[in-house]
Length: 385
Ligand SMILES: Cc1cc2nc3c(=O)[nH]c(=O)nc-3n(C[C@H](O)[C@H](O)[C@H](O)COP(=O)(O)OP(=O)(O)OC[C@H]3O[C@@H](n4cnc5c(N)ncnc54)[C@H](O)[C@@H]3O)c2cc1C
Image (cartoon, rainbow, N blue to C red; front, side, top):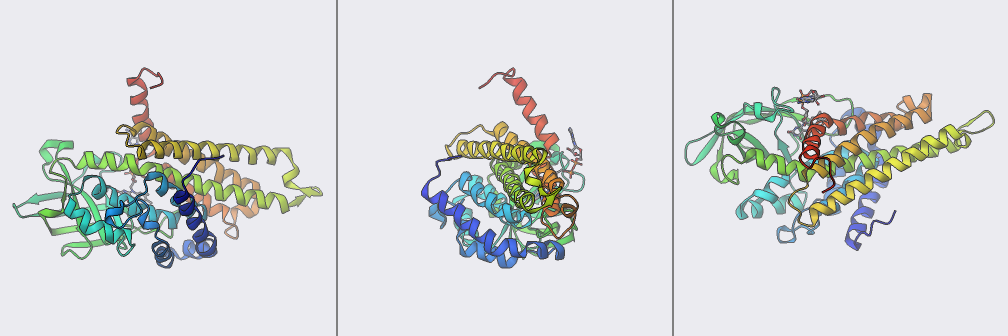
């Protein structure tokens, strides 16, 4: 399908595709097996200026938008979603600064992120506050010049590897969801350490780790926006980042389709390649249809955001849900088409299936996002906007 990308967007896609072919695909099985953070590839991504794509030009970026980011994420995910989440989580951690940060915060942090010199991460989830973020216990107490941070964040992508963390904490628990605030916390701040590193089903090249704050003092200049807007920062950040999660789903599924087609054409049973059986052909056709439908939705939502629209929460959630469910179905079918070898680690299909599962879980589970979507649908009585 012709998506009418700009020359810059085509270049971003081609550069990310090149890194996937040359660096990610040859290394992905080993990174997955060893559960190793892909530092060499991250450095390559930085050298190729891909961390600049979502940063405005005045902060050393390329001035692209969410579509530019999605194109890079999709291509990297085609190779390995463990690598692509390590890249995408930097954007997730940067969005609160980009959208709500002060001029001083932007000037200080965004050029470091754009160059890839320092990675970012986003810390919201806690052991008792997952889907229900308002149950959060991490506290930030002000003494007028600084905040004292105490609490533990769980399952944080890029945890331990990133140097710039945007963290949501309660500044006034009695105000409930209006009592949270967003902060920038730098890695070497005294009182900030890293806890359990998770051993995961998929995206095993990525780091998922606890952030532990024990009397961690952060200057008041590190408050993002003002006190009390932490959940608004969170919701608006996730609205912007979810198309990127959806793009991960599109990329993984694209990789799985390519593996399934290549295998079906060379595997001979009953005297002919299995690609000649209509049952296989229809599975492959359905996979291709679903991928293209998801891609079209992701690009359309990304373009809506880049157009300066202010209300795209529903569409952003729809893209993430649709692409996540699609990626799970397509990768499962890819394993099926490969038969026994599909179940073995010798082929990448089983890894793709393990990786795809996370798309349905993080940045709002697909059930929670369906709850959000139906509230929008009811509000407009099911009608088209
Ligand atoms: C690999 C990985 C990376 C992650 N990276 C980050 C990160 O970088 N930063 C960060 O802050 N967080 C991160 N997370 C956390 C992630 O966003 C949460 O795990 C997710 O939001 C779900 O929260 P939970 O795990 O506590 O599940 P729970 O909220 O306990 O949900 C359990 C189940 O109940 C369902 N459920 C809960 N409430 C409802 C409801 N009202 N209606 C219907 N169903 C419901 C859920 O959909 C789910 O199926 C990451 C998680 C993982 C696994």
